[in-house]
Image (cartoon, rainbow, N blue to C red; front, side, top):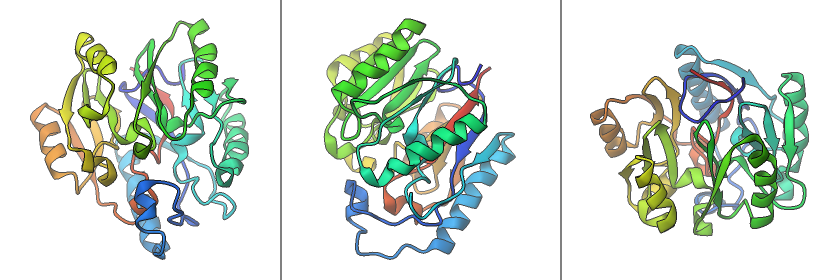
Length: 279
């Protein structure tokens, strides 16, 4: 058993430090900071606090060493998606991220986690992979995952008994996890109006309630949260309104004071690749 779903107890994660991270203008957030020099010392302190939060909650942390040839590898989520049987290796849209494909694949071999399939013809990034429950995956079709990539993911997962729901989105939102995130078995944080009506209806039918945020919250990482299991969720300190709503619903919120890393366009969910998660 590797990853049973998206909200059971998180036990082990894979991350990478932001030693070479720069605000390359490859998404709507980073474009605003493209002429800025990011403070590496601040980013490393933020990442250290991020890792410490995992360790304090009993979660083991594995590292892929930083490399100047793959500056965006701090966003570990994006190289693929992990399920019970192993992981799917994605296919990056941008050439600047290709070395992540190679190095994360080697790292997963080192960690002895089997690859159950690979997207080769289309594009697929892990920020679009939302593990809704033990047999249901929502797959964003936004800027970094296309129809052919979705077909390949479905061809890998459906024979294993998984239902895959495609979720088309505005390309400005980059990935599904920027505008929708499951934080507990039946609770999500989302910009609801940005989701297709068919997906909204499916969520309602399956009793997934939504804490709604405005569209601008997407670009402030208001939805980019990481479920830890046992009604715990990792969020940003700046997400004041969202965090209060989570607490009202019985969630324990682990708040992170991260601002510098965010300039490159990713938050706690983006920085985390789950390796082991189960009840």
